[in-house]
Image 1: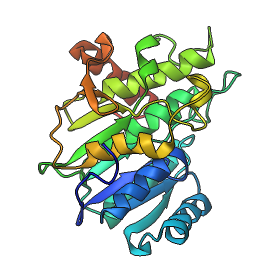
Image 2: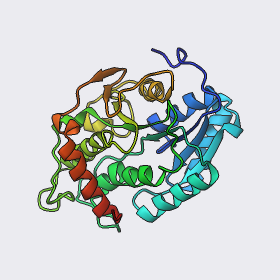
Image 3: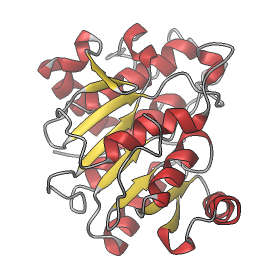
Image 4: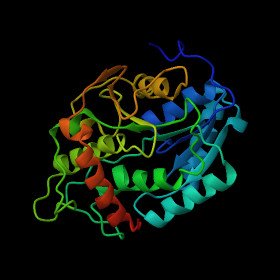
Length: 272
């Protein structure tokens, strides 16, 4: 399915994290072209505004459809500030696309919040953001969270006693763990959510997979499709591009979902 085959989506509001490059930028473009108001998240105000300006200048997106927002996901207090601003300015949010992600660095790196950096940016920040946006996320049909995950989640395990992987660090294992956690989180019964592997795309993350991939626009089409209220989803399901497939067994275990919630609440400082 090409991005031209999807229906117009006027009147909807979607927050896309990591929307300044790659799949996130293309997701924002495709949604805005269909009439969606896109809350375009970047790491800084300058990056978010530059991405919005680029879409206006290069593909003619109506500037009124793009609302730049900023938060550095290596700082959880910025995630909280982002959520508070979104709820205040957009009390109805139709879709949250949890897309922002980094490749785990070669050397073990811990944020000022005390978490392994890939685990925080790729999962914990999105966990916190989703929880804090619950007041705005609509429960109407078509409202949903779309977690942009990776097929590498199948290779992962969550180190429950050492999620920071301080004792035995591997950048590939750290990245895969963050993607498994994001996939498991889609099965959280508190939200209507799915996760999707958009395909191996030619982005900054591609070296973790292969030497070549499809364009970010092609990958984004698989994300945008799941944002369309006309596309019926199965809550908690995992999609490999446009096809619903079974995720890693851990991603469907109720015990694992509950255990991950407890761990995430602890690591982001939330109390029950």
